[in-house]
Image (cartoon, rainbow, N blue to C red; front, side):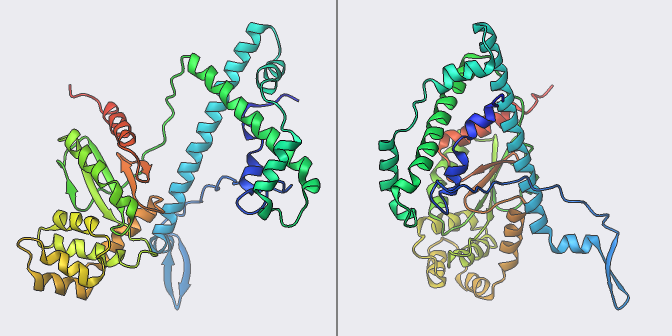
Length: 359
């Protein structure tokens, strides 16, 4: 049977995934199937009545807006990933077909010669080393019981690595232009911002003042705003994580400061003092800011006046698939985590390249 590129690259992948819960020698695997597209309802359709009062589909969707938005975004993202993988498979398949024709052999013969040949089978010694390193996860099964399974797993892993190397080499020598792009996400750029309102590129960050990775990326953001002055607008939105016990109040404090036109000084102070984000610490940080009306700030923070603003930001993040912080959107395209400067530069340059020059 003819082997596909995807089959070669997936050899051993299922066993690797099983490592999360059990040794890689398990025979059952679990895969991720695409989420089926949700059936959209006519907003005016009545889905229930109670004592003569009608409840419409719109009311239901509004009540579940964050969860539905998250599912829709996840579906879009997973659809793009499937298409990207399929496109890569098609590209490599065509390259293999071309190379096989040059050598006057079949595609399977070419794969055996150039992929299977350079990938040596794992040995019993390799299996023993792997077994010893993972003995605690073998649930009492002996090496002899698992030897053949481990050899098969390691052999498939070697074959997959060899296939990846060969395919990458083929792609590097070909003239390939990939035009498939992930569709941008509609992220509302509302909230405290830096840079001109009409900048061609908007970067929206969902962040948590207690998150160490969010603090780590701050110098990168400041450098980008200098290097791309006038070209980038940066918007900061709250996404306090539930396991950061001071993150919620820190976000509220930032907006209490915003009410006095002190948002960015407070923003910087919060990230610079992540060990002082309890309520007393927040009040002391505010007191250190020039021109702050301390009594007004304290009343705002103690009353929970800004809870709604923080919750609105968090719902917006959930609706576009944010699950952790920091999470960025560059003109609607996702960039997850405290990425290095070059990753942001690449994303911004790409966004700028897509903007038509003025006529």
